[in-house]
Amino acid sequence: MSKTFDPDRVVIFDTTLRDGEQSPGIALNVMEKIEIAEQLQRLGVDVIEAGFPISSPGDFEAVEAIAQVIEESTVCGLARTGFEDIDRAWQAVRHAPHPRIHVFIATSPIHMERKLQMTPEQVKDAAVAGVARAKGYCEDVEFSPEDGTRSDPEFMVEVLQAVVDAGATTLNIPDTVGYTTPGEFHDLIAFVVDRVRGPDNLRISTHCHNDLGLAVANSLAAVAAGARQVECTINGIGERAGNAAMEEIVMAIKTRNDTYGVDTGIDTSQLARTSRLVARLTGYPVQYNKAVVGRNAFAHEAGIHQHGVLTDKRTYEIMDAESVGQATEIVLGKHSGRHAFSDALEKMGLKVQGDVLNQAFIRFKELADRKVQITEADLEAIVAEELGVQGDAWQLVDLVVMGGLEKTPTASVQIKRNGDRRLMTSDGDGMIDAACEAIRKALDIEARLVDFNVSSVTGGVDALGDVTVQIESGGMRASGRGVSTDVVEASARAYLSAVNKIVRAREHPQKESAEGESGP
Image (cartoon, rainbow, N blue to C red; front, side):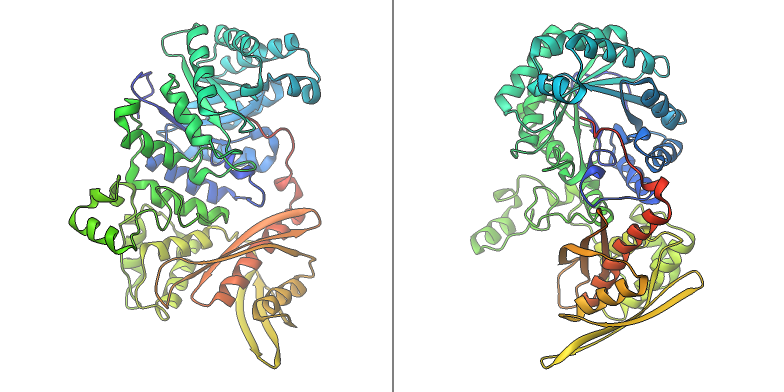
C-alpha cells in the first residue's frame, strides 16, 4: 500500500469505527472493532480512523488494540486542538507502523461564537498549536476546519495555510452538517487547492455528511476539483443521515474513470463482504436497493431485463457483480465437520478461534439441521453474532413459547451467565413480546423497545432470519442482533444482545462513558 503522494490516486480514509460508530444505538466492543479493522485492511483502505481516544477509556482501548494489529493501513486517532487530546491520541496510535493524528477545530462563525466562544484569532492560534504538538509526535498529521462549508473561505484558507506551515500534511475540508451542493463544494475545494501553498506531498481531503443526500455527489465533485483523499464509511453510516458511502465512491471512480481519471487502492471484490460485516456487527441493516452492496443491486425481475442480461450482462449492468463480491457463495450442509467449517471461515478471511469458534460451530450445526443449504452469508451472520457476545454476557439456554388465536401467548426462557442460571415465564401481546418480557423480568431491567427489524439473510422458505433491535433503558440506547431460522428465537437473541450491552454499561460505567465532541 503506497504511502507516497500520487496525483492520480485517491486515498480512501475510512471513518466507520469513529464517525460511523457515533450513529445512535451502535456500541461495538473491542473484538468487533478489530474484526472490522482487519477487514478494512483486507479491503485495501489506506487510512483507518480507529476512534476518538480521549472520548472514553473504551475508545482508547480499541484504538490502541487496532494500532497493535494493523500493519499495512495507516491507523488514525482523532483529537481536538487541546494538548491533552493530542497526547492521548498519540498514546493510542503510537504502536502502529503507520500512525496519524487527526486534529480538528471549528472555523464557521456559528461554531466559533456559539459553541467554542472563541475569536477567529484564538481559533487560528489553537489550530497551529495543536498541529505543532501533533507534529512533535509523528510526521503524518491531518487537520480539519470543522463546519468548513459554512466557514468564511478567506478565513478558512488563512487557518489552513497556518497549519500547513506548522506541519500538517493533509487538509480535510468537512461538510459537517451536509449543507453544501456539488457545484459549491467543487468551487470551494478548487479555491483551497489554488490558494494554500505547501510541500509537494500536501493532500487535500473531503469529509461529507449526507443530510441532503448529497454526500457521495459532493465527494466526487471534490475529487474532480483536485481532492486526493476522501473520508467515508462503509454503508454510509454515521451521525444523523450518515456519511459518504465508501462503496459508492470507489465504484463511481472505477466505473467512470473516463470522467475522474484517478483510481484507488481498494480491492473491490471485498466490498460486499465488508458491507455485510459492518451491517451485522452494528445492527444497521443495508437497504435492499442500496447501490453496489444492496441485495437487489444486481437483481433483475422484469422479463425484458432478464433477456438482456442473459444475452449480455452489459445491457443492464454497468458493473460486474463479481467485481464487488456479490456473487461469491459457499455451500455447507449438516454433515460438514469442524475442520470444514473452520476452513470455510478462513477462506472467507474470518479468523476465529477458541470459544467464538466453538459456539459458532454449535450454532452452525443447529442451523444445518433446519436448513438444506448453508451459504457464505449465513456463516458470516453466525460468526458476527458470536463476535458480539462478551465472555461475561448472558446467554440464551432455552426458549419455549405457546400461543393461539384464543390463548394468551406465553414464553419461558432460561438464561445463564457463568454459574448463574435464571428461568422466567411471562405472557405478552405475541410470542415475541412474551419472550422479550420474560428476559426483561429475568434480569429485572426496565427497557423499552425502540426499533425492531427482521429480514432474511438468504432466500428460500428455510432462510436464516436476521433480527435487529434497539432498546432504551434509563436514557441509554443499545442495539442487538440475533439470527435463527425461527424468528421468535432470533428476536429473543437480539433482545438479549441489546440488554447485555445495557447491563455491561451499568456494571462497567468507566468503559462506556463518552465525553467531548463528535468531530468533523
